[in-house]
Image (cartoon, rainbow, N blue to C red; front, side):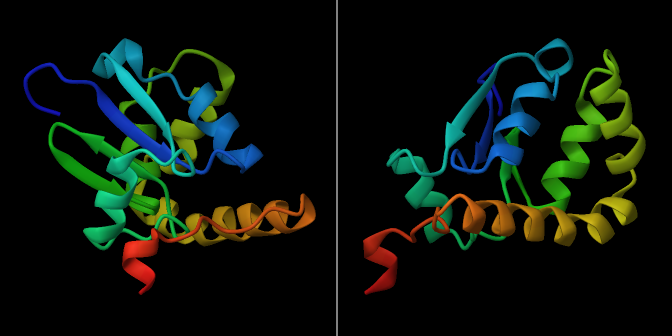
Amino acid sequence: MAGGEASLIIYDGDCVFCQNYVRFTRLRETVGPVELLDARSGDPRVERYWRDGFDLNEGMLFVHKGRVHHGAEAVHILAALSSPDGAWNRLNGLVFSNSTTAALLYPLLKLGRRATLLARGKRLIDRPPSLTE
């Protein structure tokens, strides 16, 4: 985001894959402050992004320098911007820094998230009530 504001990642806090992905991705070294926001937190920004047309069940969000990246694009940009330090970040960069590869593999990540939520007895993220009426 502009003006030295923190970048923002909105992810599903009930998804163990999502939690680990945002925890292990090393961005602070390359982009500065990064705020992690659980899409289930009730934070008003989450509703704003839903209202803007971003379905958080279809993908995480990465907001950086005033631009919103969703789903496969978010994972691609995160991989491209992440520090190459550590095995996880090198692998992440190798696989997802190519936008075509990210687009092809992201549906598998979504499927894994849904299967894991189902196995843990968790539901998809509820749309804000103001958008379901």
